[in-house]
Image (cartoon, rainbow, N blue to C red; front, side):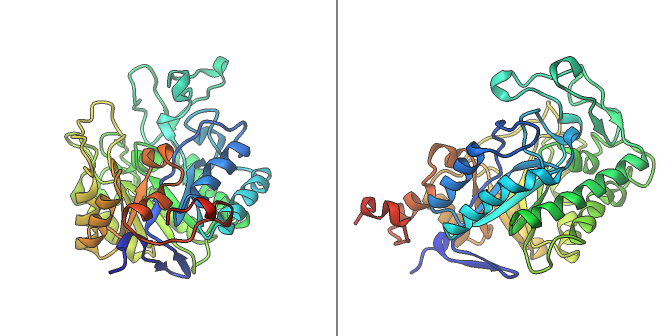
Length: 355
């Protein structure tokens, strides 16, 4: 019997050679949003290492949308050139290049993790943050509540970024609506207390992300896959929850989204998450079974056998790996060995392939 983890899957006109996806992971290694050789080697090595889909880290649609000053961006045409080199290399390894478009909202303007993950003011290279409502992630900082003009500009920013992503050669696009960043901030009543059409009811709280999606779809080719990453729950009382995630996923499916990348948390610092292997997989399974949409499972999945079981049990359609892939760039090749599955290795590495 063929390994489910190494079985291909076709989503629209895009075929992934296996179900292994490298999850978007910030590298905090950019200057003025530009990709560089670190990003080429980081993403490229995961492609040569056997993964089917490589999703580039949260890539900011505006300078103020970066988490840190070192985040990648795609807010100007000059960013495209290096990204073309990255996508070309990924494709040369028979893998698919993806990009996650993002805006950090109130969680922006912080230093990189190894510099303390501290809020930055203007003198430190930081900037004024924005959010649906003037509610800070921490008590020491208050974002500016977005007015209608600013909201419409942000939607335009996502649209323009999508056009550049197409020009750069990405073949999967993911809208980041998880982990407490801007789209998620609109979704959750803990961060969105607006009283206009962008706040209050469920229909109003999802409006911003739906409008972002519709703007993205005007530039993204219909024949290529479109994902949305969500946090299935805030892990906090009174926050966004699984039931809302299911309803949201139904609407996203109706509007042409191909897959829900199911994560959780990140919105509030007082969240209580019961961390254990595969702790988010039940959310991916529930959304898949109740909506019929494809889902991706992510979160403390580190073993080939665990990933295989998730697919065999039809809990998800793709399995995303983050820290496990940081520890092992050749995760795809090594998982194939663990599952006694023969896969092609890069010609340059063929002589090292286990027999």
